[in-house]
Image (cartoon, rainbow, N blue to C red; front, top):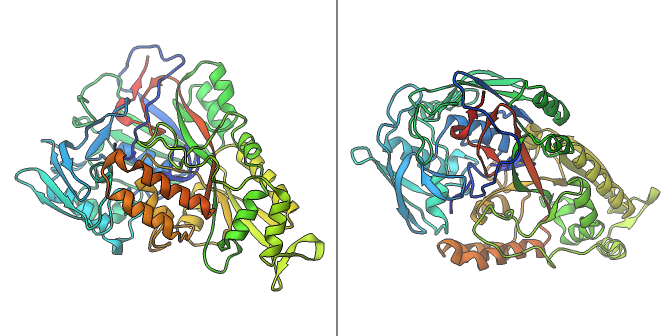
Length: 535
């Protein structure tokens, strides 16, 4: 299996989400609705983005919206087809163990400036990301810390060794978006431009409004058996930033936009019109607590009481508009290789009186106006939720606020854009106590850097989680190749829930609609090489 940002098409790491660890995934979907028509040449595809992607450098982002943009600009060593099978990417062959990997590059691959992609440049990418000093957000997600790569340009091979076992090493490194030589030398070129082997290059970047990409007609090394010159490939792609889902849906219906991803209630009217779509399951209800020392949410008793004060089933219905399904693990069903249910029976149940008693025991006593206090400080929390997923997230956050108010907690809601999630939460530049932050991955190993290790700005552990039982289970699971380690990955997740480090409670099915075009969807992202414009 191979990895698939995301910042979660819902929140962070995923598919219209805010945060993502993925670049492509193992979940395939079947298109439904009207998609008839013959492929036509010379067209422009307009695709809606629910937020501005910000820095386009593929090795310095954890945002799913940026992941989607980068899929047009960069390639990976190994790809995944719509059935979930590993297929050739930039590499035609690959092999490895939990500590070594080797890739043989295809012939004739060139960068956007016409220069050849060399094995040495690929190795440079891996070494850069694997060096903690460079603070890439992809370290520990695709490339293990301390990974060492060498490239043999004559043979076209890249060999990698890592200091600690990685159960999915070949697929993880194979999923890294690769930058060409100029971009590696000057990463400023990548912030609002590109230097990759991808099918498209950036022609214009207008942050907050649109990004225009032009197709490289010589591109012939797409995923699997992709061939250059296939009819229907768009000559130009306009990625238009449309934060309001209703506006995006209206533009699709009017034919002014070709592809739209919708998490909120507007998806129902487009489904009723039987517009072509692919749908993908993704985490949506994931409750995270900031466990930085000195914050009230660093206390297990407080975290447990906060969850006991919530009816997670009702909250899940609200944020998904009644269309969600209970979460069974940190990796959504169909996205990864493991199938154990790690959630059922492992989260605190709804018990308002027990929650109040726990807060009392933790020293948080009711004070003036009913707000709890301890040591002269009020129990006041700042709760974050993403704005890019429709009105249901706001409704759910308001329900949560009401429930916590009943516990005697002052809760300030903060609706945040994708950019704010990136700076305030992922980069650790602001104060937050809890939030709905969907994180989408396709392998349990991709979660590790977000759930352990260094905190921002030196790492991706944005919630400052410290859980020795999780770390021990991860160490054991990482030493076992492939799915044989699934029981240990499950034990690692259960250790998280025992300490209420993170609370996943509902998944959502998020459709991506198309009009005047068809496409394949993998890990919630549109695959650029699969797009066909229709007459």
